[in-house]
Picture (cartoon, rainbow, N blue to C red):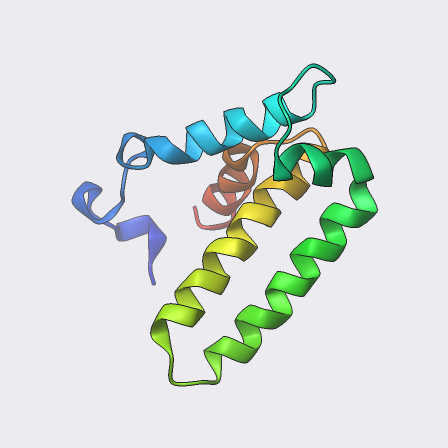
Length: 108
């Protein structure tokens, strides 16, 4: 794919995915001590190692699903990987936009 010659209509704008910002806000909120109980809060409370472990587990499940003939399972596992990936980068103090900026720079 030639990123330099893509038409503007080929690239989805951030506004097309407002729920990603909402998920990132929920992840950030779960880090606070006064956040309401949630799965995100429990995982955050267990720390970086637990977040990495969950991301790894989901990645393995996605790889297994990718070799099977169940598109729904593959997409479900892909969503889980993306979720724990977002948790991981937020745990390190970054946001998705930071990673996207690197991709953008690589494809100039």
